[in-house]
Length: 81
Image 1 (tube, rainbow, N blue to C red):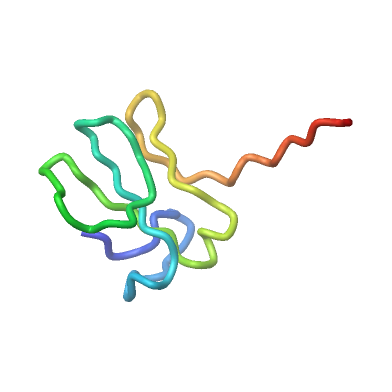
Image 2: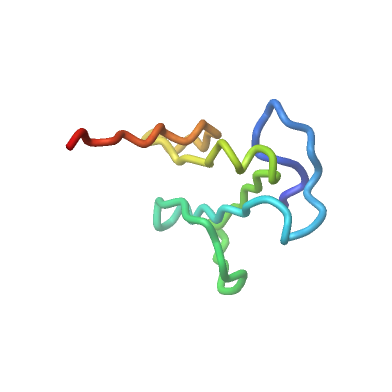
């Protein structure tokens, strides 16, 4: 059950779906995606939420060792023309 922001440094509480960004982790499928649909969840599904403030600069990532972490967005690398 999601109760607060997934960022350990943030104490914002989850109150409304329209605030922040919700992520769905399906451990059986071994992937993490933003979840626009909230139906058909199996027992291997976990949800992570970032508040508006944290979601502006961060994302939730599933590492290869299956640990879920919050990290800043990677900077956009621009190709010189």
